[in-house]
Length: 172
Image (tube, rainbow, N blue to C red; front, side):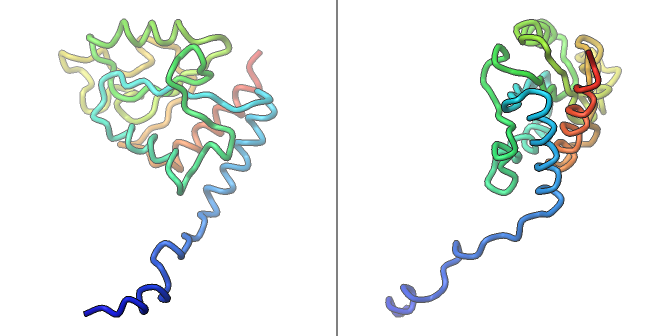
């Protein structure tokens, strides 16, 4: 039988904090600096699943968990494209979602940026050339940045967003 008092006074599992990843911290500081310089406020992102297998979505969702916590770097995910600065497209664009993807893009205010996340969104991935897909996001939308990977890691996604912010300042 377990002694109740020993459970009260021993170190709890939740008391240990993970060591912060220095690469994530560095990327986050740079992204925050670039976002502040370009927008003067936070960066609003709308994620659009154009026919994916959810691998890239899992990694994008990881950006909001307690380990990455991208909101502290000035990145927020929004439910409406009308509030978004960046459209993250995942998955090879299917015929059924072509119109929805175009409408989502058209609903965004200018300036607007499109990022293809994952191999499927970049060029169609393993679905390229099949009967059900149109290919990558650049077949129907003006893609500003491609983040390859199957799926890309959260660190790769942050690196891609940093590169987007740096190139966004150079466009008129």
